[in-house]
Amino acid sequence: MSLFKPDWAFIRRHTLLPSLSAIGAVTTLVLALWAHDFHHVRFLELHANQNAVHSDYDALLSQRRLIDRYHRRYQKFHELGFIGRESRLDWVETLRTTAAEGQLPRLSYSIEPQLGVTAPVASGQGGDDIQIRVSRLQLDMGLIHELDLLRFFDALQSKAPGLIKVNQCDIVFEGENSNASADANLSAVCTAEIFSVITSDVAGEAI
Image (tube, rainbow, N blue to C red):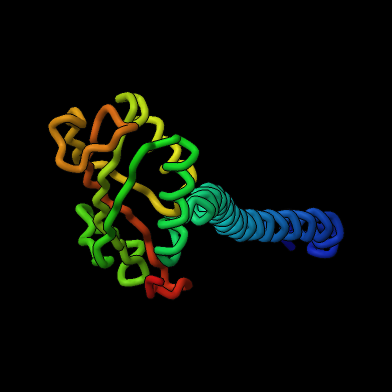
């Protein structure tokens, strides 16, 4: 009979619980590490999605601000008559009333047919939805003073539909002009251009 024969019942009784505890601890540790890695990866995905959402939201706000800003400009140009159909009747009436209010001794005019204009800088935003039109205007005016010419064009620009660009004005003394008027001291012959923009939501036929 061996003196060192193990007492397996005693060993099992005193090591079973610690062994089970150790196995449970290791299992819990492994599960905890797996759960940590899983949720860490999930957190990184959600964080990336959150950053993407924030970026999209910031881009949306920026686009909204641009839309609001350009919409205000569109409304302003539309109110000025720069966007929309060119109205010859409005232009003729504005020329007459402006000349009368400025007390010009004489005014004659001619407006050429409206033509298309090629934009100097192409825009990828508008494409075929935007067309620029121009009508060339010739004026022959009698003036009392040179300032009458500046006042006339200032008033014309503020009242007439569209945008006007004055290309050239030749001023001579009335005595040198065959169309001399008794009330005018000077005669001015000017050429100008009337610009308008036709967008896809506006009929472009001039009247």
